[in-house]
Amino acid sequence: MKLNVKNFIGQKIKRWRLEQNITQEQLALRLGLSQGYINQIENGKRSFSLETLQKVADALGIPVSAIFDEINNDASLKVVRSYDKKTMKKGPLTQYVFLKPQVSAKKRKKKKINRKEVLDLLNKLPEDVAKHYIRLMKMEVKILKKK
Image 1 (cartoon, rainbow, N blue to C red):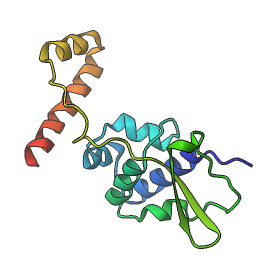
Image 2: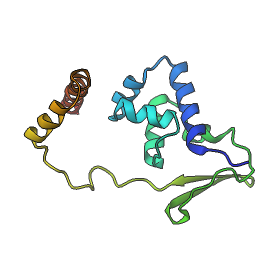
Image 3: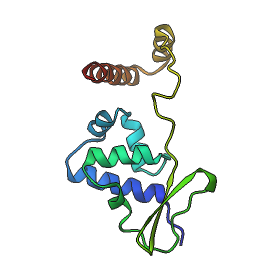
Image 4: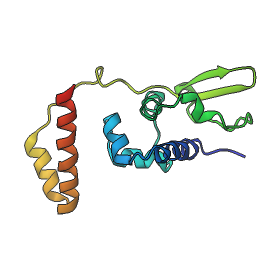
């Protein structure tokens, strides 16, 4: 039986987050990600890198290996693109397969935000959705100012 790894990991992240009484939004703020991204991870609808998984584990105070401790050694983990994976062995019977980390933010080219484009996009959204994004952007600015 093939295991849906994204669903499995997402469910474990959600369980640990709820055990600590942390909302998706609070976790997103800790990680510098959106609440929607956290929701997609928890529901198995989003792929993620080992780097992102490590950040989530750190934010929840759990070792990244704990996420996989319940997986049986039945070759259930499978990465479709074998050239884009990283394998970690833990003992003679356990092996973890991870996606390679994404390029770090420092290595990516920074694109200057065009204020007019952002406002035009926000104006096309329903008012309540636009207000939500504005609130998220304000929180992000506060976080970035603290760094």
